[in-house]
Image (tube, rainbow, N blue to C red; front, side, top):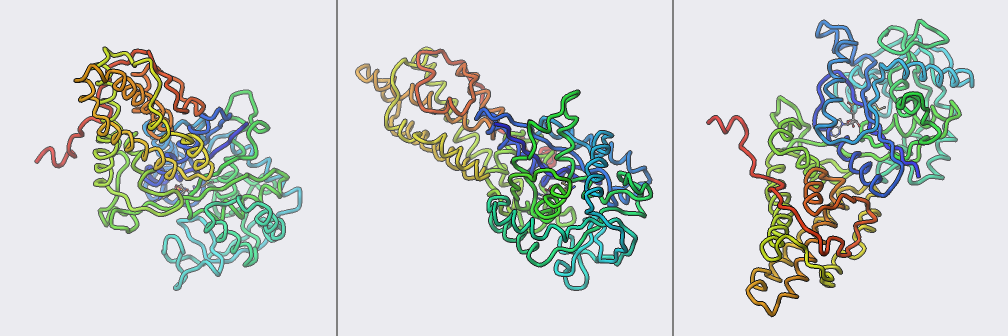
Length: 509
Ligand code: MSP
């Protein structure tokens, strides 16, 4: 089955921050998990490079928009492997191929009669690059997202007849209650539609940093139309000489943040309908990361968690694990460096890392590095029954946090099992050799299964553990508890999560 998953594409007016990393990581966990299930996955991410915010930022720095876009797009692109993101393509909306395809799709919207020219006047947020409708505007004409003053703007625009899609969108929501999740976001989008849809600007006349409107070259497309289409255009040119559109479209999951809900769940399906293109299956909406003090992260408040600092000190497995474990998908979450350190030491190093090294060390100490060829302990096996199925079901609901919690419960259970069985005592008594064999075989199988299930979350550490067991099969099908390493040799394992050095500022003191 084909499975096409996307992140939002990031604005290039600044460097990547934790919010971007978070979205890429959660999406990557789902993409990796689906590959483990044998799905034919295509995973897209990229950068959104046109529009007023980029042009303004470039001019403020005295450079051309393309130069700023090139510099920042390179930073976003470079961050992906650092986070172990397994995207299949990285789209830039300044790619020539994207531009040509945007023009072709929107020309079809125009030919189908869903555009008209008119004078637009409204309250505009330069940060969102969006005109706000009356019921969204905060008191004092402020942006509901940025809380900055909106600007009264007027210009001759091409309009998209969003109003023509009132009924089709209502039908889409009624027939597909799983089109948007979580439910709170589904309700929010549905209420926005129910409040009555107005036509929206499709082009800007005063701007030049954008894709030219083919039927009226004095205009460029409003950046959101150009941006949303990335999900569709990328399939046309991601693989040289091969069009992947039929294979992967419609998209299975769009993963986005809650601030861009309206664009993805109202404008986007309407636009696709206007171009006779099938609409995506699901839009999954995550919350916002906040500083450890629960406030919006900002440099002036000093509550920013810098992804690069976490990567340097703790590594990418730790950042991935921390964000998915600490912030329930869909909800907002407060994050900070102390939380990273705690999860790293208490859970990754002491619980999983320690379980792995103890298990392997005991196989070496008591059985010369060969896993006893014996059946596993039904008691421990029972704890793992149905685990892969549960993880699958939770990931199907994009409950990446819930699935990780299920897995982690077993990590803890295994540590208790070691304490209960006390293999070091069994080892002192020759009559209990069979019992020791069972305990060791069970623990090896347990860390193997755990590592297969954790492969989507912490690919590096789980990969090292599986390599030490001489296992490279990470398919979910292989996550059943079945003594698969029995009789095989295991390699020594270096600590998966070594002690971390203090931050540079404290090290110097
Ligand atoms: N360019 C648009 C998206 C176009 S998609 C066709 C955009 N870019 S963005 O750079 O501002 O945001 C990219 C993604 O990061 C969005 O899904 C946004 O919600 C998410 N996040 C940005 N800041 C965030 C947090 N502080 N926390 C979590 N995610 C946040 O919007």
